[in-house]
Image (tube, rainbow, N blue to C red; front, side, top):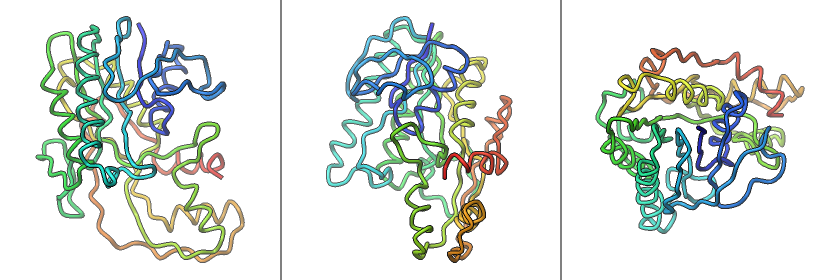
Length: 289
């Protein structure tokens, strides 16, 4: 049996692929175009896939669904000037994929959702999975509705799970740029950087959560959402690390005093998940430079 991953050539999807390859698990990537040679650390199978397709996934054990159609560089607001097309691709397309996975006999489907499902809770609220979602963007609404459609398919032998991830960071694949590349360039050029802080999780920690969810007792995970977040990171602190590493003297942005809603990850930690925190960020920084 093997793993299938949609959106596998994106920053986030690639981490799930590499985690499985590190354990010598066969992986099939479902993307519109064949990955270039050397994109992954080991050979993978490829099947052409676009949101809305209903692929035959017979012979696979688990599907991780990361593919998402949006305006480049934007998730919230990613519908641009075509909200109907955004919903058709991402909600209807995801449901079609979930149905195909169930029909193909897969045992588990992990859906990459988002903290955006919590939406309108006041800044500074501690977010738990027991809270009723209050999405205040179309992106958050689509993620929540896709979760609910997937959970409704739960049945003996078919285990649906949602991963509500915060911002994901980590080194980029060959030919790609990591999420902070533009920020780093702006800082190196001496341009003013607006204060900001937010929650982050390393892609390897996200992929480890996926591994734990795949291995967990179905009774503990079926039809459930799991928060995934690690550090609260201020741009001041991130750029201070960059400045120290490269000997830069550009002024650091002020620390942000905006309240941030932390994600309670107790449910994921109960399965043995231990993210790397700031230690992991410092260790990976040279690869981001």
